[in-house]
Length: 212
Length: 284
Image (cartoon, rainbow over all chains, first blue to last red):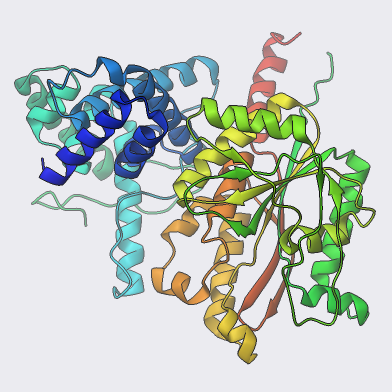
């Protein structure tokens, strides 16, 4: 973790301990909101749920920052808390929402970066389409595998950090990650229908694992 | 079986506020924007609108969100060099403003109360919509990042729904807003291209995708609120709500769109729920 992040974390905690919650939250939002939103969006698949989950995360951070003991970095602590909020959010939604998860709640976009603006529009469009399919595929994975793929493969966390966040061992994380990748590969290469995109072709996976 | 009606207490609208609209009115020039605003005003009056909550791009406050909770708002004269000026004074809604402030505090957004008045981003569209100046208004500032604005919009939407009165949430700002082109009378195809992309995304229920548009195009178009007013509205209405484009006109460098939104917090989801309940008879 970089020194600048450590100093921001320390500043957040200092504001908090001095009773300036507003400044603490403001610093926290400036530092982490975009990354956390990316996580909640990847987990929940649409902007409204993603933002509501982020709001819940901020409330929980505000409530429980006093219990942060500094055993892990603030970043890891918040990711663990956020993952739990997302899981609970999904459970709550599936209890109250008699809709297919895999349906109209899924946005037609991805939050993964698209190269721009010098890229050829056709290439950009194709890249975006592939990203869309990958995201849709990830959303079809079982919860435990999906979380690991998002934390490790998309958010770029190390396997030990991802395992720490999910409170599982590194070996279990490795195994789930492997199974998740195999499952994702199968989902994508077999093809699947997305509402509104019926009849549109799917990608296949090349010998080296790349999408073609 | 008992008939179930799902209705929402929130309407949303994106409006422009170029003072040239006042000149067009004076000159009795035909304008689809003026007509759309007037029609929307009649529709809202018939509906029984009780308050206009207005995010104004002429009140941009970088660090904090502000709410004007005054019981009465005086006109703020903030445009010059046009052949016509108007005065628009209107009542406020301090009780609802207080609820919004409390909700913002509870949700860690920490908005503040501040007297601002009715600037021309509110006055001009409302002059066409509610010429009698009799609908209470709560002016909101536009601030921080688009994501923060979207978060504030979610809180505003939920609070307004719980309040229960009939609300028009208005985001006032131009689409493209390149004032150097406006001053020089220069039309650029990129501005129209930008406007049309934004309107298309809004009409497809993909409003948040404006943040992923080509950065060069955005920089050229200089949208008036940097999408923050729009993100507030999308937070209130639901980001997948499809806007209905009621009018679009182009001035040099300035895109004027009128886009109407009905509440997406209810529509599809509740329709699905109702289908389920009607079939199973679980709804009483």
